[in-house]
Image (cartoon, rainbow, N blue to C red):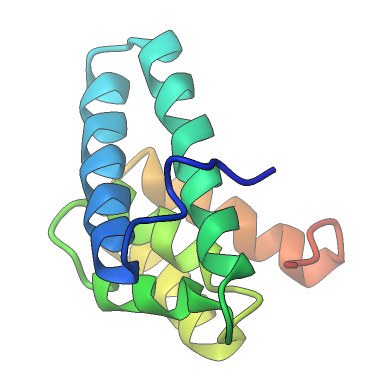
Length: 123
């Protein structure tokens, strides 16, 4: 489902909003504020859907967040790009696993496992 409030925003503005929301999500997770984490999840998903709906699937713009200092930003950007650039997104997920920054490293590892076993198929 698309969010009409996101449609007028540029791809760059959506990328910045995505980054801000992922950082806020990380902070909520650190404070064990699950409801706040989940609210941001829904908004992040809406941004991904908006970017996907644009000509050429603009989720690729989120790849500039690979290597970000915030591990939640990296994890979420990598997952968003699995259907767009699978090899690059997979490398980013593996890099997160290798850095052992938990809980994101565990989440990235489970994503890789689910990809390998066919449980998860990116769209």
